[in-house]
Image (cartoon, rainbow, N blue to C red; front, side, top):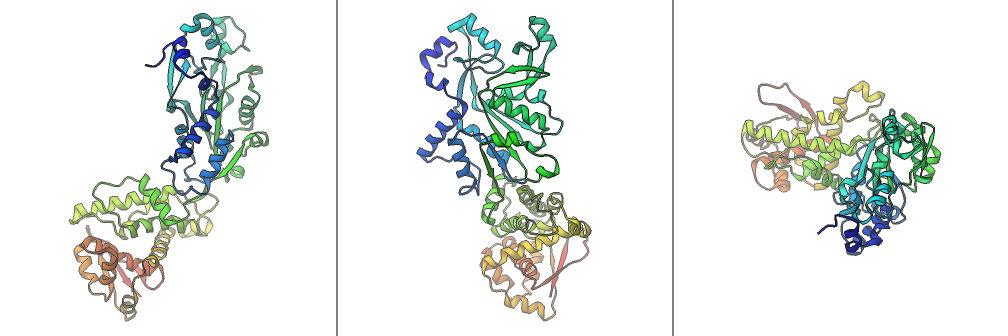
Length: 462
């Protein structure tokens, strides 16, 4: 049974745990996870040999740290997963700042101990409640983070404005004995950044000209985008100097890593099949965008592009199965129908703006299929020869009609069977992937015909 008073707590709870700082607590729990070889940050993929080792070192060194990287690199997710390094629950005095029962810092907590002593009530704080996150914006104030003087409190208590009793506490004090995360640190005004490192390093701060002493126990972690250093703001030198580790994040370094992340994060309707070649092509779209000169590379291409595209691809397959029958199996056509997931996530350079986001997105899809096709080492010479002879192929959206049309191209269904096995919907997906891959390899050309009714047709030729 959990202790309800300080006296019960002293008899049943290890006092050495109450003497630990939050960084000591995270360090000890991390060491235990390492000894047991437990997963440190479940759901974080692609960082096993880069970000996570640097993160582990920073935690073992009891440092505040910043994750530096462009958009969509799981920075916020990593910070939120730090709660897994905290105890499941900790005891606290029933005060606004969740005071340590042995060493309260708030006037309320000190008064409670003086008046109630061992009968002081104890509450139990879950690890999730010990994480406070703030998205930095230019209009964020010192009062938002630290607090402000409350004249009404001062009047009621008869205390001066320089007394802690007169403060309405902000986010950072309320994170006492926990983790305080600031996303996009560079967006904070310099005076707010100064207040942050002052309260952390010296334990004091000036609020409206009054010096306030507040020795918080807080683990401070940040994220920032390198682009923001020049585009919107910068991290002031004194604060940057006091951040223990600067850890660089990055995008997935292989298509398989990216596909694993997207499959974990995306909503995929039950029963919809997204074959491997389609999943890899979805990731390759993001990879191609990160190399395209028409895309602003300083802004980055978020992993959310691939996640959103995968969701639309699955939704398109589901829609087709409902309208035309058959099993819902994703095919290359669905990537082109998922353009809205791409165009809204690309920051274009001048050349890209001239061409238009949709043209750039279609080019990226074609390049993506060209990147993935060589992985399967299929025999495509007869297919290319058929089109070099002047033949054309119009591929309907209806799977049965599409499969029949593919039968006219020598070697196409054979390559599809080698890739997909049996099943008409999988064969159509694989056959269409082969064609799109050849287009991406510039061995075929591709044109779109007009859409009619509920059927979309496309033409392939040399």
